[in-house]
Amino acid sequence: MASYVGAERASSTDPRDWGRALAVALERLLEAARLDGHYAQHEHLCGVDLVLRIEEDGDGAKVAVRWVPEGNGDLDGEKLAS
Image (cartoon, rainbow, N blue to C red; front, side):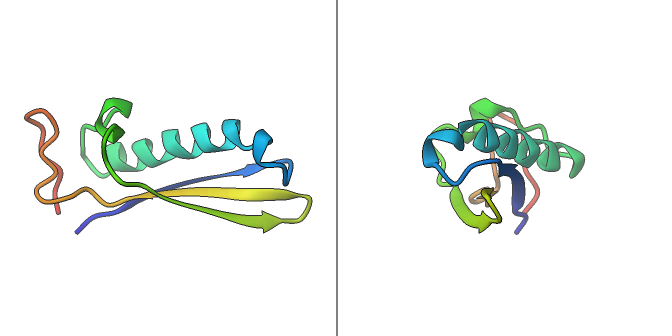
């Protein structure tokens, strides 16, 4: 089964500063799915479980998001390979 990961570094260890990094990580996750030949847009992430991992990275934090499409990955008529 395919899985997709997006990551970005936040310049601060304060969780209130991680929003931009999370948004970039999600966009990279979707780009990875597109490069794999899948039509995936932000709407396809609504209502699905994502794994969020945050690790210290010097004076900042690495924010990573992982998505494992469930089943056949039927996305409004589009199929994700598993």
